[in-house]
Length: 75
Image 1 (tube, helix red, strand yellow):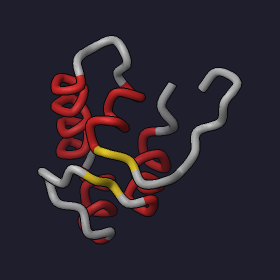
Image 2 (cartoon, one colour):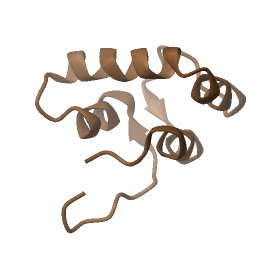
Image 3 (cartoon, helix red, strand yellow):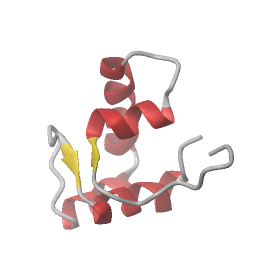
Image 4 (tube, one colour):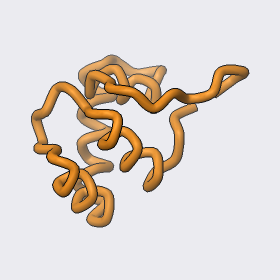
């Protein structure tokens, strides 16, 4: 991500989604990230094991780490 490095921390679901999809609305970005999670069976399982459920508004640092390990850092 530009000159800044991505920081693993707690993120709002929409906040993280907008980092992946900066040129669309927060609602659309969240919907697209949800699709990526549901369609990526490995990521989906890792997130479930990390306590994530579809509809969660907050992602823990561990859940964020699962996402970036499977689909890469945003940006």
